Length: 276
Length: 305
Image (cartoon, rainbow over all chains, first blue to last red; front, side, top):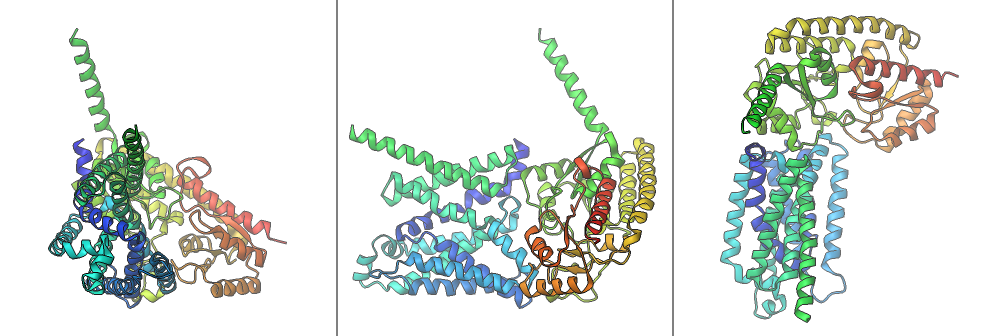
């Protein structure tokens, strides 16, 4: 057991500390019905990295980080401007388009640079098993900062996600707060993609939030159930990865998937009990 | 009654300790080094190889057991020259095994003393996926296999002096077998000297140089960049003009691309495994080189007419 802890210490810390914020943001995302916005923003950020590589900046330097952050802000601006409420085109469609076009642009840019290919692979798959203490620390610091911003302005952010029309009616500057939301969200997602890859970040955002929505409706309970789901699934996934020697990220994603199935069964049973 | 389990436990414990002491735990990054280590170490080592024989050695997907294996290893055999640069350092960081520190006898660097080809005069990303230290795929030249075997035997001797004679004897056998085979291979390939062979990635230059087969026409426009239509058209034209009839493909490369080009040029597509596989037809290092030589000869034969 000590050896397991030795090997899995940093992945475990990463998977216990970091999803806290992801689960909370996931509740926003699920409520806004923009499930794939994280993939799109991650892809836009990766496009920034591609461009940085093309301009001969080494990957994982501050310049390439600045590029990916800059692109994330552009993506945030795009999603802010396309938040349409009474329109025939659902925002999800635009998000999908941003995702595929960013991916295709990345391929075009990278056709001239092999180094970028490795970088793109890294962003897609990530490797939570090989996360460095430095990465965990840096990302955790960022997440605490973002969480503080979200806590201070929680009324505005929650109003926007959970009762958008009322918020607008109250005269809240929807565009500005939306932009801030997407910008912070993009930053959070991009940082975690560096550690765990796109699959894992998507799962941490969406699965716990969906599980919680099956069982509860009050924010307090949603958060609690979401965090529990993320924590237990992380531990089960990491343990299975160690014992059965499976790729770590994929094992956690599957554990989260199993958690969702269990939650659905539990919710169905509860409904039946209520009826009888 | 309590005595029996105790005795059993101590017996088991003694067995575990003695076998752990007797055998060196050896980890190799790829199967070419692994296969040679097995021949030198025989039953005096426990061998673990991290990359799969069919995997691209530049990208090995990490699993928890790799860290455990590195943590318990007495020796690590690597190619160096940036072959494993993308995945080995973080694994080693996780394993925290001081026996494998650079410069310790447990860290066996096979590219040491190998004359690396294609060392770039200037590092320029626009030239593709190039390596500052030179082309790291040097094991396809059997003479470099000999260098690796010598490094491995020397390191094993340092780590387990009591078995040194055994290792040296195995090394001698390996070298003798290789020399005998070498003459055979050169004879087999003699009729095809100077004949161009197309490959997918710039992987086989050491093999090409040793056996006198130019292999500097690639399906990739630049190393690591997927084939583009314009480049493939160029390759096809060149193959037709110079009557080039053999394309070699490695397991993790896109065979379809090679088959398309072969369809246009009437060439043979030959499977070129990147490594010995530890079992089957390409079990040992010599089996592997033998397989490569025979495959390429077969390719030439098939398209002779």
